[in-house]
Image (cartoon, rainbow, N blue to C red; front, side, top):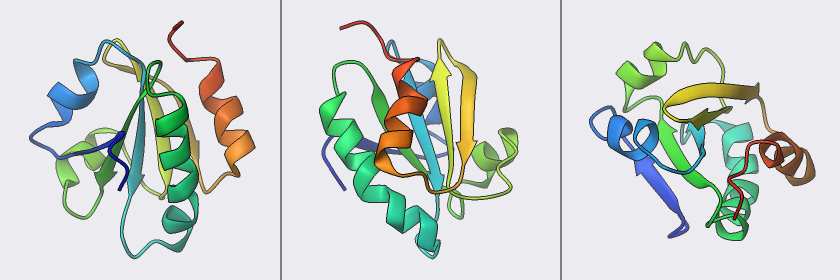
Length: 111
């Protein structure tokens, strides 16, 4: 995993996501999920490219049932953008990188 991607857990989600000063892209995923693994390289590239405007966090749904349940994650990958501790946008499924960039671009912090 890229140094620009943070792994959050049920215990650290508040600190890593809800208390972030930057918008946060949360990737709800699991290691057995093929589409999750397909989208992972694009997520890591986005984390690097937008590191000053966006925080990227991954949550393993198998290991973190409380957060997954709280945000009603039924399908993975599910990507949710949080701003000021609130979910503001989401998308389900493996999108190509250009569509991921379109999805996040309207929520980016102004650098």
